[in-house]
Length: 356
Image (cartoon, rainbow, N blue to C red; front, top):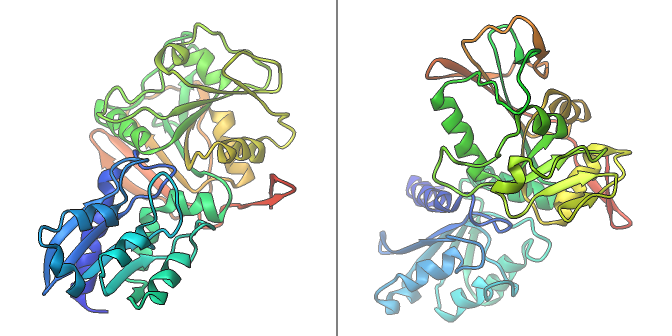
């Protein structure tokens, strides 16, 4: 693999990242057209329902006659099926592009090598695997959704220097802030990158959070409220700030409610999100909810801040035993992050997902 080839694929990845938080349930994709070692066109998938990256890149080539002697670079296999937009493969073939270099194969069963095969059948030279790991990491949410049959799960919390996430004397309906403004802004950036944000009912009752991205310029994720016994109040801020809320309960609820039986709660929650085409979920609280995800091993990343405050008496933070935590300083706080290489998958039986 040439260094020039890697450099061009990195450009595709950087273009694709511009669509983060707006393309789901589609993946993030960037594409460039190269002629005589010069980029003559580039594009990315900007938003779900809009043109795919390959189409954008081809349309941005001013001299279309150059396409028949060009190479298309794209971080993910071009689609070969009709969706919100026509198949990208057909557009590539129509424009007689002779060479296509691809980062990773699409895990979606509607594609899954079919796009590559169609290009080859139309006498296009195809190369797959350039910066494979980087391309897979870019679309980790999309890959998890299609390969593991569940959303990509990120756990996030904040705790004091002495390991508490909240004090025992916290005033109901008022958030007790542990971290700096910079850390809270970063948290809101993370929210903008995910399809949904999940919290347990105790977090709603204690903090009455908005679950928005008010400290960041991005879309707010879909709130998922885990409330088995239907304790939520319809006056909660989350209902005022969002047009759509997934309220998961085993009791008969209101128009926001989705009924699940909670006998195998974490797989059932993930199954519900998967059935609603939600690629990712950021689990923000509280301690019991996060710990349930940890104990069931249905999580892919964990991130927690340690602030400067001392609480002394309160609710202890969740626990993950690992010596692989990565440490980073954010203003006056410390951010710890960890990836879970042994995360559970879900398999489908009789139309439902069950834990392996």
